[in-house]
Length: 84
Image (cartoon, rainbow, N blue to C red; front, side):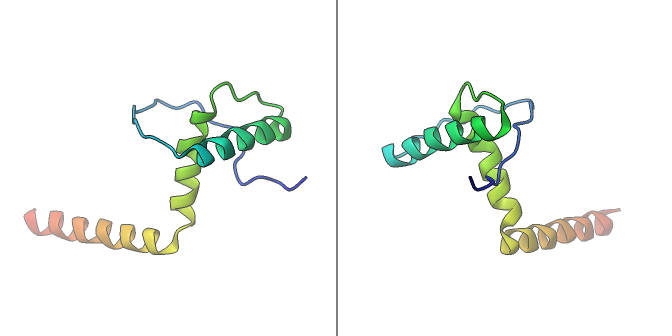
């Protein structure tokens, strides 16, 4: 079996977000949760808990997002330095 990109899910303070998923994405999420539970020997009680780490992993892997975020942080630092 191929190794999945997500590992064990960390317990973190959640922020409530409500979003509708297409049925096909929900089915894939259920299948992913089942495979991840087998792979990590960690039961996934609620497959929706996978959405946040999946999004985090997606954003971390997006080079253009990281580049834009760094540029934005640099701009904020410069602005704060000017105000001081």
